[in-house]
Length: 69
Image (cartoon, one colour):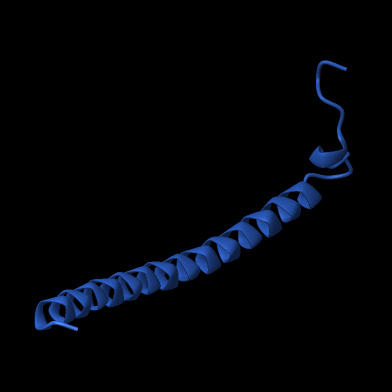
């Protein structure tokens, strides 16, 4: 293999390695964001259920018929 071809191959490997590292960082950040959003959604669902329960003896919103029925 010529020196020029070897240099091009090493350069390509360096670019690919950098791309893989960048993508790995993106995936790690997205994983953290997804976990944070899951916790927020669970908290909001819990709060909504508590608010619905404190609303009295009414039918829960999820079980009510839409107003046009």
